[in-house]
Length: 238
Ligand code: ADP
Ligand code: MG
Image (cartoon, rainbow, N blue to C red; front, side, top):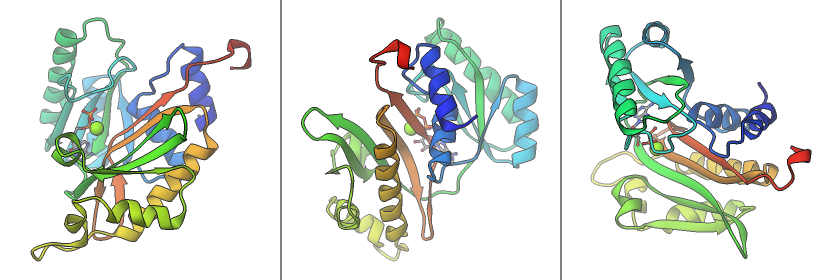
């Protein structure tokens, strides 16, 4: 399905939260580098997809009712064998049944375990006065506890992108510290500009979250994506 069909489908189902799989596909079509992902609707299918991808893999709950997958017990990382994959599938289903008995479950998403990198995040939310605003920060405690993030109004200039990355307090972690190699900052700048373009081209998207993106010495890849659509103004035009 095209990104527009995916958006339309969610709207027809009365949903504004897109699943990780839908968000991943829409952003991929928008030119943003996201992890390869496949839906499995049974433990057997999860196992066969993991064989095709090659272990280690990650399993995540695929449900339009669950925005925060790990909080729900819906993420299993570093699965090394088909046996671990089928067990993880059962464990996720069990956890979701307990915590979200009403949730509509599509299955699980299967993706390759990405090699470790420095976790960064890019977000978009809409400000009443300024419209869409992009946020950049380092992942984990840097954003949750220290609120070490930067903001710019969409559309971003190249200069905005460069400044956003360099002005966070954690920037030295990206620039390379204590013998750690630096990450590919120019690739992150390009990524911010691509997200800015995507946001401009999709006014129907209300919120966007790439959390986390793994930043490497060369390149970067988003391993989680979440899009939220605007409430529909006029049902006829959908
Ligand atoms: P959620 O944010 O909905 O809880 P995520 O998809 O972000 O779920 O997964 C939780 C954490 O698991 C991420 O922050 C990241 O550290 C790790 N993770 C997720 N996907 C991968 C992956 N493909 N490879 C490696 N680590 C991953
Ligand atoms: Mg996440």
